[in-house]
Each structure stands twice: as structure tokens, then as C-alpha cells.
Amino acid sequence: MRSSRRRFLQLVPLGCATTLLAACTPAPAVPAPAPTSPAVAPAPTAAPTSAPASAAAKPTAPPPTVAPTSAPPTATPAKTSVLPSYIPLASKPKADYPSKGELYEDGYIKYPANPAKATPPDAPGQGSTVTVFVDGLYSPPTPLEQNPAWQAINKQLNANVQFNIVPPADYAPKLATLMAGGDYPDLISLFGGLNAAPNLPNFLQQAAADLTPFLSGDPVKAYPNLAALPTFAWRNAGSVIGGHLWTVPISRPSIASLMIKNSTVWDQEVGQDYAPKNADDFKRVLQELTNPSANRWAIGTFQAALSGPFEIAWFASLFGAPNNWRLEPSGKLVKDYETPEFKEAVGYVRDLIGAGVFYPDSLTTTSPPAAMTNMVSGKCVLSVRSLGLDWTDGYQQGQRLTPPQTFGFMRHFAAHDGAKPVFFLGTGYGASTMLKKASSDRIKELLGILNWTAAPFGSQEDLLLTYGIEGTDYTLDASGNPVTTDAWMGDAYNAPWRYMSQHHQVMYNANYPEFTKLVADAEAALIPIGVSDATLGYYSPTNNAKGVRLRLSFNDGLLEVLQGRRGLGELDQLVSDWQNNGGEDIRNEYLAAIAG
Image (cartoon, rainbow, N blue to C red):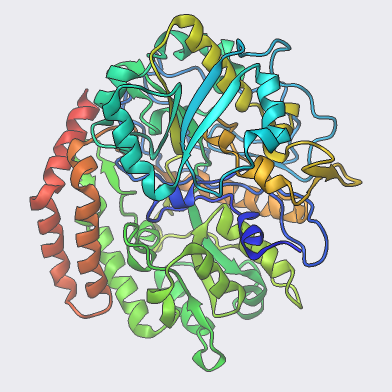
């Protein structure tokens, strides 16, 4: 019988725009638990972990804010001379739901049959030791001496990969100590990109290998699995500083979070696939769904200090506010707090709270899994949750209820009639990997290893990285889907290969193949109306040093406004305080970086 911790971690592909990146970075394909027998291993879509909006350095050109449109937006910046060429893999397994472009994922109904080798026959390593510093997001893996999967990967790499895995609570101070010491490992995993540590851009330019000659433009073709990483991941992670390429991003999907609904209840009481027409219509629906006598409320959430109370960012998108920052045609950079659209959204949510449609314990629900549990237990019908762990977890739990409950997504809409819907895209990356300065031959060797660990979903390499050794860590069912054993978690899942490099995420859930279609439908509906944060890929020293404190202070006051303890008019003072205490400096630094 699986332990409760394993049952939770089996669902950990996660992306969340909440507090600590280290607590919610997506994991790879993992198995869904079953009550009495080994589970078939699904690989649900991992949503992009939204690194702090400031986790950025200067790319070659301002990342475009995607205007609402009926066509898929492009992820390619105006200048791509420094960024690697984007070259999708021609040899990847054929998808049941093919990606429509860089911003989209491939979707698979079952694990690809007859996995093929996706890297050159010659091993990338030269028999040397490769040291890796990484955040320990999960329990430590089985030690190398007792870990057949780790041993097999090292053998195929022809390298002795040694991980220095530090607990999340120690990651920041140990990274700072490492940076100050001068004796660096071969690879450093930077969680949150350039926001992983203060003054990181200066450190990279001093200590990191300049990857420009190896990866910028067409030279990346020598590493085809890295060339298949979407451009937005390189750009948004701040891989480019001062016209040079310094890091390899850990790519994540462009959708971080969305409104999840209990479709079973919604279809019965609101109407099958009903989409709200506007903000007033949505309030009506929320009031109809709220039934305190049955211990059910329309909407529930959890309180994450950094992302804002009561999912204010999602509501702000309905009113057309910026996705954190908006660069206007005039060249003016506008923070979401400063716009009338944001203020209107605050007034709307304040009214909803007063109407009693939020689950009363939303303020004391402190984690994404707890918020999903509230949905599964029927305490709320709607919740803004991550595309990865939360939705996958909820869907799988719902299917195991008696009778089953289906969790789908709610169609996005505009608050006002005639307005175009606007959806906030995520950052598209979870971390990035730095290579320390070394000889050209050593850099090529390390990039070859990263190319190997970024092998596509469904390849021999990715099967080994994700599931370990067949017969020891997994078996294949009649359909060819991996069924994990008790050894799998220690041997494969907890080993942090995916934080060196990894292929772009895919949609796959072998236990519930219909879930892949739901996620594909969500991408098709939401990405075309998506807008990005205009500051992604740029670096602000003030935001790096003071941004979290400023955001926490603003959100503390915002919570009081939303709950009616302070007047709506006092929002203006909160904005002014944010501007005067560092917000204006952040704006000016971003503008200078954009003007570059």
C-alpha cells in the first residue's frame, strides 16, 4: 500500500503563481495512485511555475504583449540574433493532439510505443565527473550506490553525475555562499531564473560560461533537444544578458493557472458548458451555486501572500488589467495596481465577498492541495488552480468518487459586453541552468549532457530518466503504459535530472486519457487570448531587492480593502505607497533595460 506522502507526490507536476517557486516547481510525468493496485503512470501536463515576475534579465528585445486575437500569438521576439533558433523535433513521437506552436504542448492518449533513441549513439560525456548544485524539492533519491536508474543514466552519459541536493529552506543561503566562494560546480540550477539570488546578472557574467558561440542562432542545431525548447522559455528566463547567452531554461507551459470547475455540478445547475456572458452574469451564477445550508459555496481559494488575496489577478484579467506590467505603444510602462481596470476588479471582488459566494475558510486554506481538497469534497464548485498538479490531482480524485465527479475548466470571458477577453499567461519557465566557465571542449561536453537529459517525451532516454529501469522501477501494461513499483520514487522520481534540463512539457494521463483532451481544449481556448507580462526577460535590481516586501505590504492593505475593513478609495493610497517606496525605481529600471 502506498504511503500518503507517495500518493500526494505522485501527482506533483505543478505550476503555481503563488509564494515559493521551490515549493511548486513542476515535476515530470508521474503515476496516478489507485486504491488497491499499482497505478498506470500518467504524465499530466505540468503548468509553468510562475517564477516571480522580476525573475528576469535583459533579452535582445522587449517580449511582445500578445493582443487578444482569434489566432495563436507568436512567442518570437523582434530580435533573435542572440537567442537560439527554435527548431521543433521532426523525430518526436506523433501526438494525438499536436502542438499548434511554441506556446502549446503536444498531447498523448497513451505512452508512445517502441521508444526510440533521441540522441547520438556516442555518449556525450568523456568519462569525467559532473557536479550539479540543485534545490531539493523532494525527498533525497536513493543513493547512487543502490540506485540502478542513476547508475544506468551515468553509464549512458559516460559521466559520473554527482548531485549536491540542498533542502529548499537552505537553497538561497547556500547558493549565496556558493556564489561568494569562487569554487563552483559544473552546473548550477537557478530556481526562479535571475531572481534566484541578488545581483545574479553580475555573477553570471563573471562566473558562467558564455553560451553564445555554442547555442545562439543556428549553432544550437548541434544540440537538437535544446533547439526544441521554445523561444519564450529562453527569453522569459532571462537567459540573455548584455547581448550574450548565459543559461539554459527549464521550460514550462505558457498557461500557469485557470478557473477549474466541478463540471458535474456546473452542468446540472448552471447548464452544460455554460460560459458566463459578463461580470454581472458571473455574479448571478456564483450566487446560484452558493448554498451554505448544504455546506457549499461557489468559489474557494487559498491565501498565498505574494500572488494576492482572493485570486485578484484572475479577476483583474476579466476587466482587462495588465498581466503584472503592460508596455503601452507610447512607451509607458504601467503596473496592474495603477490601472482603473484593476481598481474595478477590486470593487467587483469586494462585492462578491460581501455577497457571501466565497468559501468562508478561504482565508485559512494555506496551500494549493488543500484548496483542491475543498473542491473535491464539494465545499466549492470553482477555484483558480494550476494547470498541472491542482487540476490533475482534482480530476483523478474526482474520478475515484462514488459517483464520479468531473473537473473541467471554465471558459474565460470579459467583464463587459463588447470587450475582448484577456487571459494572463504564465512565465513559461521554472528555472535555468548555468554552466561554469571552462574550456570549449568541456562546455561542449556539458551541453551534450544537457541535450541528453532534454530528450523528448516517449524517447528511450526520457523513459529511463522519468521511470527508471523496466522490471525494477516500472513494468508496462497491455497498452504500453508504465506502471510504477515501490522502488520508482527513490530511484527515478526524486532524482533531479529534470532540473538540469528537460524537454518541453506534454499532456499525458494514461489512467484518464480523456483528461488530455480537456487540457488541449483549455490551451486552444485560452492561449489565443493570452497576454504576457511585459517585463519578463528583464532585470530590475530594486525589484530583486525589495519587490517581495513591497508586494506583501500592498497585498496586506488590499486584503483589508477587499474585506471591507478599509474603503475602496484607500486603494489609491496603497498604490501611492508602493510607487514611493520603490515601485517607481522598479519601473525606471525596467524601462532602462527595455530601452537597452
